[in-house]
Length: 88
Image (cartoon, rainbow, N blue to C red; front, side, top):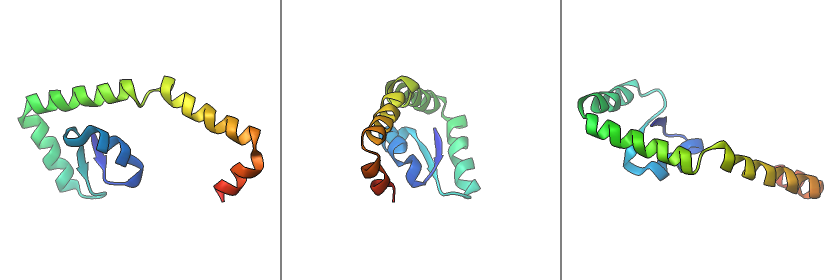
């Protein structure tokens, strides 16, 4: 997985450890170097691809994410005043 180094992607890139290609936003040279590495090292590409698919299957999929979303919705519905205070 190629990802910019931004807070919203930290949990995913941390879980992938060395299988994630991380680069600074706008750093095209770094992105290109990472892609070049995958092109030149097919074993690494395959390993990184498998790691990404496994993480997506085990953690970042709708069957799991919908439970998180439903829990948030249920907490807001059951206590809307607290949910509003947290959102502020």
